[in-house]
Image (cartoon, rainbow, N blue to C red; front, top):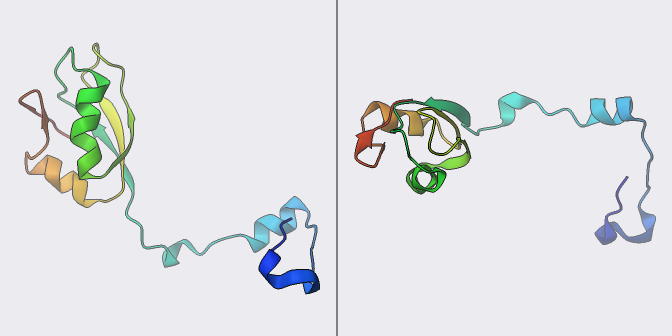
Length: 102
């Protein structure tokens, strides 16, 4: 439960069971206008460190990066816009001079 101080003492505080709360808190996902996706990034040069990748990905909309530094040629990148995928397709994303694919 929560209490909204702006409503003052006239507020009614309700304790809901989890099933009732879950039903009441469902969101119609069609109303959400957020483009978010996870990209499988490949062609990362061996020896690349996490920081090098993040410095490339953050400015183009990167939110989260899963990458094992140094010994992997692949990573998972969560981005805030589907348009980021087109940047990869256009060859605009690279690290250490190597074009990355997604």
